[in-house]
Amino acid sequence: VDPRTVAARPTPEGVRLEPLSRLVHETPDWFERLYDMFTVAVSDAPFPIEERPTPPDAYRTRVIDSPTADLDATLIATDGADWVGFTTLRPLAADPARWSQMLTGVKPSHRGSGIATAHKRQGLRVVARKGATSVGTMNHEQNIGIRTSNERLGFEPTRTIHLMVNRLTARLHA
Image 1 (cartoon, rainbow, N blue to C red):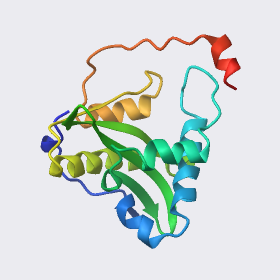
Image 2: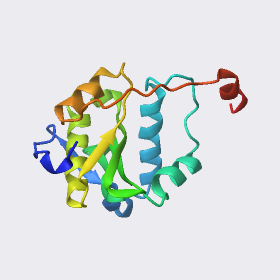
Image 3: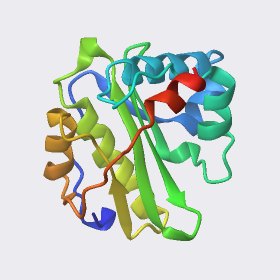
């Protein structure tokens, strides 16, 4: 989707979308809160194999300390003092005008309220201001909620990706 074409819309009532770049200075336990939301999101995501959540140090390295990480493009949904959702976008190393919308997650208590779509919408607007001309994303075909959100925002299917798993290998790394 071309992020420059995404219009602003109000967020769900009582919810604020804050860039992680600001919250790291205001919230001493910011990493623990972010990691908690990540583990909740992946615990019920429709992945093809059972996986343990990424350990905290590995998650921090991959998401926060990565050379392509952009904490302005990681948005946190807050409801009062509670962190209830997140989305992460990052540029592709080979072409900084192309970005990927990574995992978007909302705590079960707040799902169905429009937070995921608001997150994705605001994230697209943030990266458009950073020069993005194209943003891609992936989702599991069984995740109807996020598929609907992506379609509302103008994402269109381009191809089917077949994930193949050698279950023996998966067990060896457990």
